[in-house]
Image (cartoon, rainbow, N blue to C red; front, top):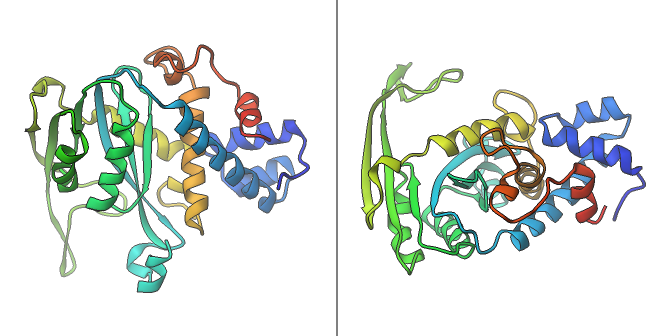
Amino acid sequence: MANDLPTEKKVLAISMLAEGSSIRSVERTLSVHRDTVMRLGVRVGQACAKIQDEKMRNIQSTDFQIDEIWGFVGKKRKQTKTWEWQDGIGDVWTFIALARDTKLIPAFWVGQRTVIHAKHFLRDLESRLAHRIQLSTDGLAAYRETAGEVFCDGVDFGQVVRTYSVSHLGNFKVAATRYSPAEVVKTETKIVLGSPDIERISTSHVEKQNHTLRMHCRRLTRLTNAFSKKFENFRAAVALNFAYYNFCKRHITVKMTPAQAAGIESNQWTVAELIERCGE
């Protein structure tokens, strides 16, 4: 049920959420209760997911990069009980597909880093494509196990496999610390399926996008107390940010929004237009 916020405040609230502000900072800035801000964000995010599902069809790009970004709902996996994890509490992964030429993100999937969820994600991506593609991913085995089955018309698929250094923390071996990423000691490029251009097997563009997502989606910002308490809220926040990125945000590389570069939209959307399309 829509709240009675004026349109101007809705635009400001969604703009702030999409640019990395927390719900409480929006509350303080706009003098709007945090529950109202949260409900607005969830409604708009869920509508954004539907808009993207309808718009992202017959994508003409032929070079895609895939990566996953970690987050959590409620608490981190190591702190959850078995029944909580089954209810969507704990670690969660967002799969992202990025078109190398237009920077468009036509597909994403929020779930677990497993074969089942990787297959769901790849099937969703495949259903949106117009042509055979070259696909680049990290070394996740789930992609190797499912890509051949999902892309029935074939795919040119390569992986970037990195080996990380391992250090000791007490009695445990760890690949990274809380504040520092692990050091990459070896990188291999492997052809998995088809005949990909080995020079274009890369995940650097989508990894940069992951950094952008962490900066703009407060629920994915590291080392903060901003996180979702419900899975549906997390997914809505991610969907809002991808819609804002695809339709409203001018990309410095392509000098327009990704949706414009991909020929999906002729104009850059304002946040007010996005909210209107969401039924607010």
